[in-house]
Length: 246
Image (cartoon, rainbow, N blue to C red; front, side, top):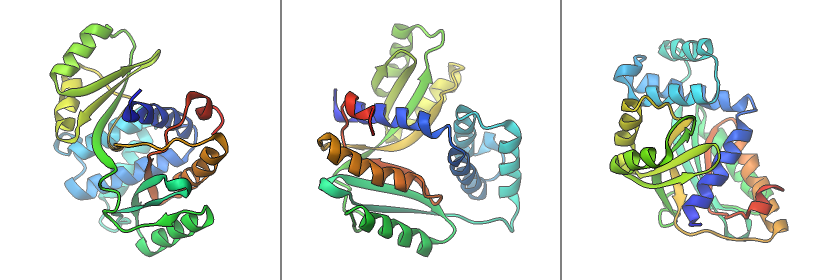
């Protein structure tokens, strides 16, 4: 299995666990807020908001929560969040890319530096990991009653670079520039993905033994628990057995 396939499988399983926690709602609400302040509260005229709403539905966020978040973001006196990224290395040379939405960048970078130090990692300079990660579109689509061969032909024609299939989901991987095209294709097919986002896929991965992998994943999970952090990407490749214990 190629690095990005293994990685996307890990992220989907991790995302399913995260969805059980209220923190995922907080992260979605921030994304809604940023998208509304960026391009307005009408999802038909705001693709980023439309995507945030779709992801909120995929996470089973109640409609009233979504509407409340949009209304609150429309308030000129509401909190304003900045998008900032941080890059560094966990222990054992594992690359870590962190995407944040924050109303206090000083607090955020202080917390991130503290976590790197606590778990024997290092905060690097922006751009230092540009050679490790590519931005790709990742769509997770419930299989439902879809016919696999027909579905795969449709999305490949629409620009899919790769399509994974397991018992429950299709995972579509596209180039960053084909993300909007694929989103439109799924809309035309009347298919609502469970999640759709631009994510960072590692070109190369690192394999570690169980003990080392657990240590690295404790840092990754500490980052994911931080309220200012939206997404954490890494290039640690876990075996199926390791995914069951981390």
